[in-house]
Image (cartoon, rainbow, N blue to C red; front, side, top):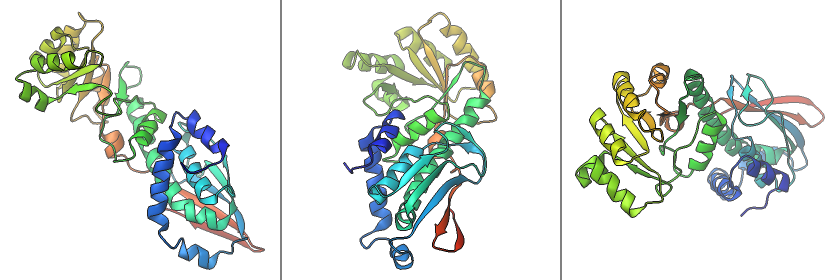
Length: 309
């Protein structure tokens, strides 16, 4: 694993992220972006001795996520020459123009790391910002917003971290964490109950969620012992019917999924379900536009605004 400053590693760990995962993402991203011959533009124009401070600044309001990840990218490129000072913490609501962090040190290092740091910071902050919108939409109902496995390959841990920063909760991280019996499993097994019992026999220690698309299937799954039932594409009236039935089973949790919209989130939450599963949190979140504003101390008062290009 790449060496980074212990203070940066500590911030990553305190965020609940595994350093080796962050390092793997950053290493591959930098290899992809820098290429074999380095940053030829920056190295041609910027002297090795030139230093500056640069601010990470959002162009619009949102929720920030990924500051420790961005710091890791700067530290890997800078090899200890760059210093990152945080102006806020992940999970915070931020306004346009607010300084999220300041990076100081050699300009070459700042510019070479800039795109990798911003790509991840903008994306993760976009996930957190969208998640917060959903969380706010169902506030006071008791329902929680939950993510799915519809994540970008290689970025699942980071994207699910961003969901937590936005106030959402995580579903399983991988196929081995918990069982989710879906429609294709039901078809292969010959029924909801048969599929559930096969999984329970094979993995009695695991949590088993069963996906259903009718009220009758939901009743069957709950009666068979399923403690988590995913109600797929059910209108609010059917959701309320399943919720009423499930009140006789206090350990059962219900999750609405499929076709959910931000505009309709509260109506779904008010049916009494425990979770709303929202794949859009990770697969469709727009980025939070964040730029890097740098002032170059070369004896002249020069300012450069480096954005998302």
